[in-house]
Image (cartoon, rainbow, N blue to C red; front, side, top):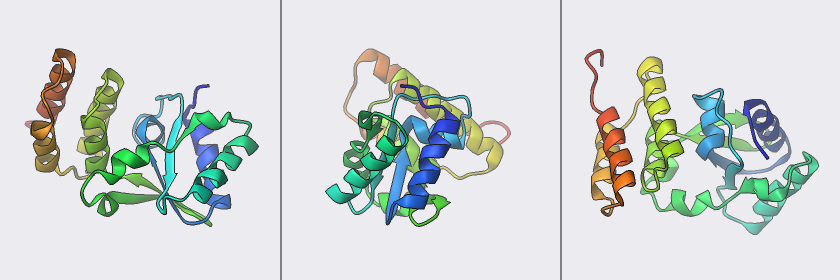
Amino acid sequence: MTFDRPRIDRLLARAAAQLDGEWLVVGGSVAAIWFAATRTTEDVDMFGLAGSNAERLALMAIAEDEGLPIEAISTTAEYFVRRIANWRDELVVLLQGRATIYRPSATLFLLLKARRLSATDLEDCLALIAHCRTSGEWIEVDRVRAELAALPAPATALFERRAALATALLPTSSS
C-alpha cells in the first residue's frame, strides 16, 4: 500500500477527530504533508505520547475503519524518538481536534533520520533543509552535526550519506 499526501491527510484528520490525547507523526508520512508534497510512503509512523496499548489499539481501529491494513500503521518510531534527549521540546502542533497531533521540529526530524540515513532518508533530509532555508524554519545545526559526529563508524555508503547531510547543513552564501 502506498500513502500519498491526500491519503495521509485523511487518516490524520480522522485521527485528530476521533482519538484522544497527544500523538506524534514522523517519517516519510510527515515529510509528505509538511515539505515534500509528492513524497509517498508505505506506512504511517505515528504513536500516542502516553505510550499505552490502548492508544495503539485505538489507532489500529481508525486504520481499519479507513480500510487500511493495520500493518500500514507503525508505532515503532516511538522507540527511536524516546532515545533523543528533550524530544518532547521539539514537537510542533500539526492538527488540533479531540486529539492533538504533532510533527517533529526540523531538528528532531533530522536527528531521527541521521542514525539510519537510508538513501530515501537523505533525500528527505536534504528536502527539509531546502524547505527550512526558504521558509525560515530553524534547525539546531550544531546539535544535528554533533549527533552525526557521535554516531558509530558506518559502512561506506552510510558514511557518504552522513557526510552529504553534514555538508548540506553548512551555511550557504545566502544564509
